[in-house]
Image (cartoon, chains in turn red, purple):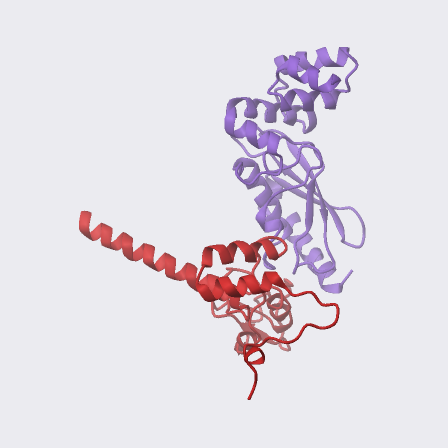
Length: 151
Length: 199
């Protein structure tokens, strides 16, 4: 039987390794649903503030290969497509050279043109994002309720 | 420099040089060296702002990882603006940091900087002294920004009241730029500026 700690994904500290208290705190906040504090700490930990993490590898691999038109160009390298160009299409329908978009998505999860986001493998980021979506949904519902009552 | 960065700058360079903004003299872009790693930009102050009629020179450094990382841009021309350091010319603008996107170009960067001159963000300041003046004494901020535009960027209207105060400090042996900074920082209160300079 696996022990309690390894089941939860913990491992013993290596020699000289210091426990990552920050990561434990983030996990605690995430699991207890305290998203405002979680977001604050994630932003404090990440360099350059709120820049988003890389796109999930599965989502990147699932981007469909497409045939571009020859007079179009890739917004990342600005080169025109030719017959040999391998292109991928984002969910927002923007197309790029495979090499260009893959390099970009290793760094951040949004479309270089319209910033529409792909899913990430970062659990904290995804938790905050879902929380924000729910919040804006709630606000919209509240607004429509308000409008229907007072218009 | 990585091939993709240099090739992209070459393409962009052609795009800017033939763009409509260049025809209107609103933005300019020049090469500084042959390897496309450093460029010199220029933007005109937008109309109906204190920067109108002035021209601002920018230093643009292109990283090897461009366009996956933003270019490093700094104002060479001295400027009085809440989001630009009056000392170093460093710029606080999200697209030059974490909001960069690979589809942006030097042309869109220059146009964004021009937009920043027209719409400052005093709540996200680079220069706290300027930002405080912008929020608390906006009329004085506008006059000061206009005066700096005239003094450093070929703008109109040097403002004779400000000029006289600077001359008073020059007579006391203070260097001109230092005098301008001290007076601007103390809302053109000659007494307090003098006190700070000689304390």
